[in-house]
Image (cartoon, rainbow, N blue to C red; front, side):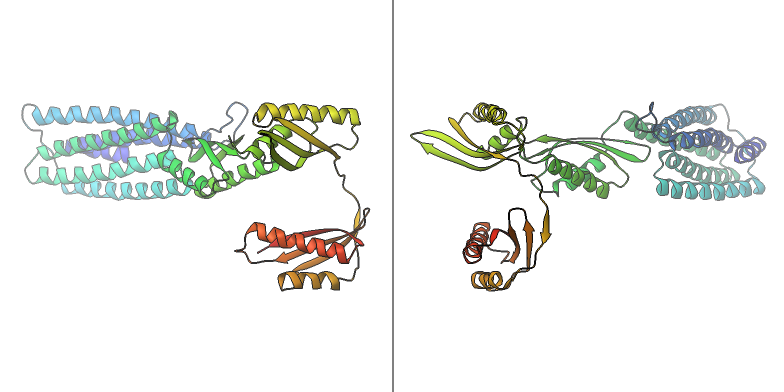
Length: 430
């Protein structure tokens, strides 16, 4: 309707400004059809052939729109310059009804721009944003045409040609912005603002997560991030997975709707015990090591440790694993000259049940050592005997070493006064 209205009135009034706006609206018609098609394609879910989805269809459509706009701007500019510098000025019939038509066109352009802009913000759509930009350009161009017609009506016929040239510049500027923005997306240029937000979100996770690499791209209103993080080499698989989950959640909060892939690598920790743990746990069948002790004897570093292996292994097989572990540690940690291992079977889960036991003695011991009652005290009856589970509340500003000393003191006193309790497990919290 706009194309027909602008073209018909422009030809009857001999207004290049209105004819140029008709051409501009014609390109918008093609652009709107491209946008309609692109949004339909971009909304399809990912499939085996397009595993990242179809979001870039919107940017391809926007690039095609920009090409139409650039072509239209060149044509309009050529015609306007021809009138301005040709022989004699063209007569423009700027009657009152032509001005009324232009005012109606301005109202339509304003409504189109507003609706498209609101919808593009709501759905984060590049194609709808490009349409809103086109319609805003139409609004500015139609306003310029109205001003040019008013000048022509006042006796300055070149005002219409100047308005047409202004429309050409607007269209070319819009095309340039579209080309630059959508080529960046299609070439996977890193979105600077989103990358900064992602780095800040990961940094808030603290020193336990080391950001080694971050690669980002944008398509179809979504951010895609490939992240490589480093975690301690002695961290269990579950801890590494938890760190990856924390990164994904942080990026989702910073960039809602983003698609994040996290790869976890061990950090290059130079700590002696860290490297010993990493080398030991890399050996097949090793389930756990503890009680590491490193001593210097005559200028030599000697290591002793307790090694837990599956209980169904034969002694011969367990000895082979221990020798392999010792070789692995000596190769990974050349500072260690010799390794002594103590073999233990891996404890299998055992049945336990809650036991009723007089807690008065244990509570008295806790009050004497800490000055207050335990926060929680339970007793379990296991195959090995009675086990006490005890939770202490201590000053959160106290050193971990002091808290451990108090827990050890309570364990020793409970075992001494209640020999029927075979184990005391003390949990300390602030």
